[in-house]
Image 1 (cartoon, rainbow, N blue to C red):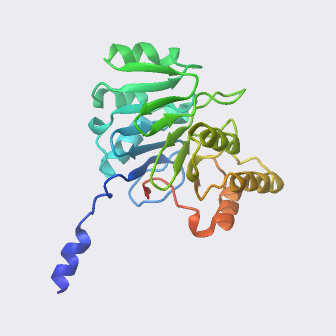
Image 2: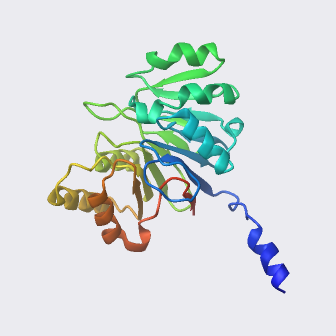
Length: 254
């Protein structure tokens, strides 16, 4: 009986068919032992059809080491989405390139020129993103948002509702979630990623929480540049529906 329990405990059961699995590959917020935490963000989205890398963190060596640790093979990636120009989201590109099969890269039009030559010379397709577009069945870009730092978010359709993923949410996390809801005309199940709230006052944070509540956001998973105070307030507001999303975390929807 004991031996049977040990064998079963060692089995890793796959995510159910039709579900979406998100693995946090790069983050300065810790979660899984053995992963290297460093400032930046990247996550892998395994959907019903394609596998998508969203951002590449700041250091390619750390990204690749964490991928190996978490059982993520660069060759399984079908496309890469870069949220915005900052190095803590694009710094892993050079180290990652030789490990990939030719894939599609969705890069904000605001800075696509920085990457086009190196990506296309390696046999990759570069797709500049300005407005909303479909990346693959069930996965969409919000298009470039914001009047300062231009940034795109990722929208994933799921049986539970929309999953909205942001790199830093420079245009505002409420505005990005609202854009996703308007674009897809569906309820938001989860908002995940960096929310860029480290410098906000408690009063401002309360207003942001109210804004996401008014959009009907069911769950949140803040990390990276969200800030300690903001993360604590999100945890208090959403309780069990505030999910851990530090480095190495895996979130399956639904």
